[in-house]
Image 1 (cartoon, helix red, strand yellow):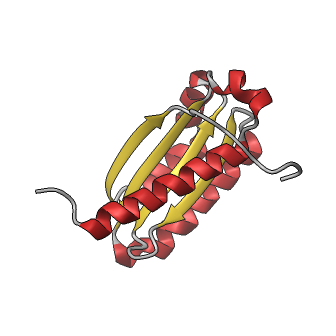
Image 2: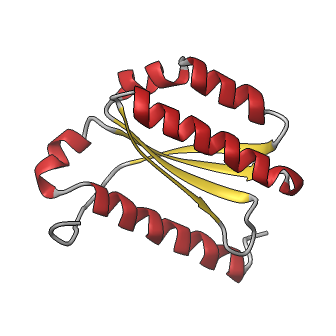
Length: 138
């Protein structure tokens, strides 16, 4: 059976938000550079009773990666308003080498080990940037 209207509507809103964030991050001068970037959505379902512990582990991993890894460019983690245990993370890496280096770092391995019993499902979706626009100065 297909998804109900509210589920489709929520998925559509998340997609629009993600497109806006990617558009805000990149400008037209960097579109050529964007072709080499890895842009990925991580769709994660967390055990609701573990949500606060999961968010703490995620925040630590993201902050460490941004601080230590030049090839990790952006993370935006978002929770579904109607179901906060459904999390979508927009991840942008400089290129495939940066991504491979990232998943082999001690802090990423620590994150994966910490959350392994908290996460019930993970879907990684690679996406292509097809356009970008943003207000000047933002």
